[in-house]
Length: 139
Image 1 (cartoon, rainbow, N blue to C red):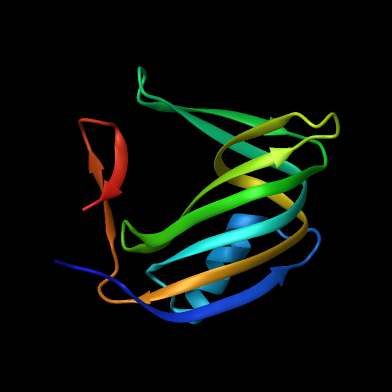
Image 2 (tube, rainbow, N blue to C red):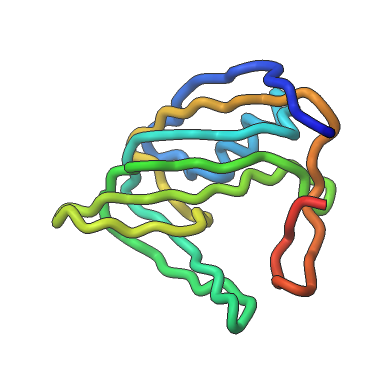
């Protein structure tokens, strides 16, 4: 049986105007975090989401140019093509109290964002293309 052990907990926030994913990648590279999980709350001034269409095996993307609250943000950190890759899903609340969610893509601009990263010890998980699903999954 294989298991992961929690190594460190990183907690912080991003600044208003930061692009969420690229700023997180800079932080992950600075701290050399290659294996972990991420959770966050806050708000965005715009966001790009993806929905993976299993029939076409392609992402359908949609850009939201509006202020929304981050109700739930969760994901994992692994390696893809030799680089650190945060795989993040999110649920946003809109002004009318409806919600939208999906795979978080760039560009997503932060209004306020607080996060917790759990870093795990062990060999990083590596994503490889899976022809059956059309996704990059953990090897």
